[in-house]
Image (cartoon, rainbow, N blue to C red):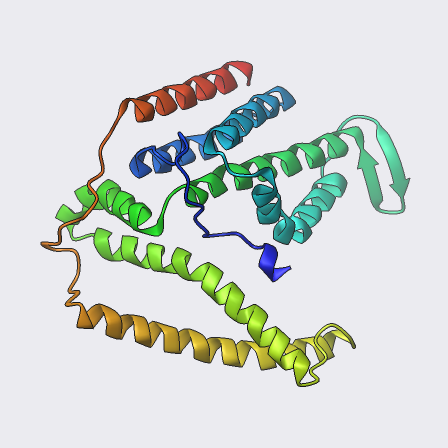
Amino acid sequence: MLRDITIGQYFPSDSFVHRLDPRFKIIITLIFTVTLFIGDSFSSLVIGGVYTLTAVLFSKIKIRMFVKSIKPLMPFLLITAVFNLFLSDGGETVFEWKFLKITEGGIDMSIFMLVRIILLIVGSSLLTYTTSPISLTDAVERLLSPLSRFGFPSHELAMMMSIALRFIPTLIEETDKIISAQKARGAELDTGSLMTRVKGMVSILIPLFISSFRRADELATAMESRCYHGGEGRTRLRQLKVTYRDYIAVTFTLLFTGIIIAVG
């Protein structure tokens, strides 16, 4: 299961989406997220699905990578669907037993929220799949740079976000190695009662925390040895440039938003 988690990973390619300016990709992702929550009909979800599928095809990333990003979140998705199924009301009653009742409105709301969250996961995953951590850091810093005049630490915040995203796959891999090592030593992590499994997690969390602190210390030492003292006065190897692709992508996104608002 841990190996299926693709959050924070970057897949290099030369696709249309990869070549977009990362600043525009962040803005487009925010517009896409807001637009998904504006629409409250199944027609808006269909339009959102077409938009998302088009973006995925233009990114040239395999569909199974997005399926992997959804699989670890399936328990959360199922819980959300069940809550909407029983707590939403409206329409005719389909099933009723004691205090539990399923209505047509509950079924519609459950499906609607499930599809909306899946589209949100796939759309937001495109940002990290097609943008390197360095480019993402530069983009966040540039977008937040106007706030620096008021003392806002835009560079530091961008750097923290980049490091956090960069180390998600590393920590997942480290966790998988620790689990394999503990199982080889006879630890029972998949069997026994719930309390037994919770106690077994201690043998995973402690080495993981120690490894994380060690990596953080090594990273801090490496940054200091390279004379890193913050973003002031720093230059960049790759300069962010806006091209016609960015305007096409934004226009397409705004058109998508306009259609969603019109459909309702």
